[in-house]
Image (cartoon, rainbow, N blue to C red):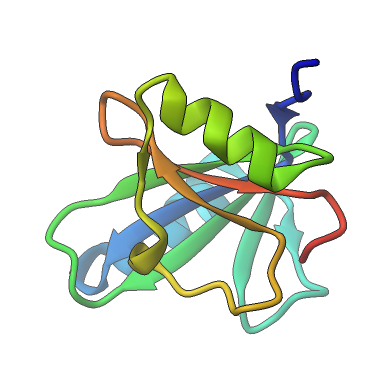
Length: 120
């Protein structure tokens, strides 16, 4: 039996400090996306059916986009992804011991959070 994996709703953009305010202004003022206010101080915007989160990353020199995958069984999904060549990268951002999910990178080094939908 194969485990179901599907796209999540959250997209995180990790942005270096020297670009952070300009990126927020771009999505807010130039693109005109609707802000997500209920999770302040986190900065997010509605991006169609998705949510785009702009995270300040003080130690990064360039921006990265991180994606989310949902699964009802994170352990099986993470094993399937690892068996398919994905690299586990859980130390990249701690999620906590009780979190039902983890981090992987695809072959192009794009980070994905793999989690059970109610794990957050």
